[in-house]
Length: 270
Image (cartoon, rainbow, N blue to C red):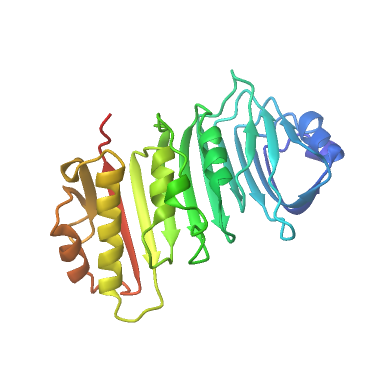
């Protein structure tokens, strides 16, 4: 440990976190600025990271058996950015005066979600940080067990999400996306969809029609208030119209017809 006292960046893979490990971060690394952890488990109830020098932290939760949520508390006055990647929403705790400016959250969803997922997400967004959120749905039916009749609505959606990215292979209306938009109104929205159906432009056209109508009708945004980044026009932001999606798909020979990405910039109306 004496030889590590001057370390400013530390990356560890496949670690099991215990009290000794947390104490090492707290007392043995006084100049640590960047911490990258890929963990396969922990033996403590709460992961309490304390560091007076830490500026950036990345936490990859790679617990494979019995998907576990993680309770993380960070006391780091200089922390600027926290990145988390896992299969469940973490519980993040910070002293009120030491909240990081940015939080990057990436979730890899393999199992169906229920209402508790959206409740926990909304609670997480109560942190005053700026959020970038990426959600990858690996199963087509990942959101089918949440019905519209029992939808939980939040009167005040969070506005601190800078970027929301949803990646899905579902051929149905993207219900998870619309439910997330009841929780937050992101400044930028990226929807990526892929399918194994060859010659699938009609599939994509239906998908994007769902997205367009869903944002307009359900989420207090008119068509003229939505811009999209047109990849066939040098990536310029243009007002979304009824003909844009058709033009976008018909001019899409340069990219794989099985995959498509749509970038939107909604101007939310309150």
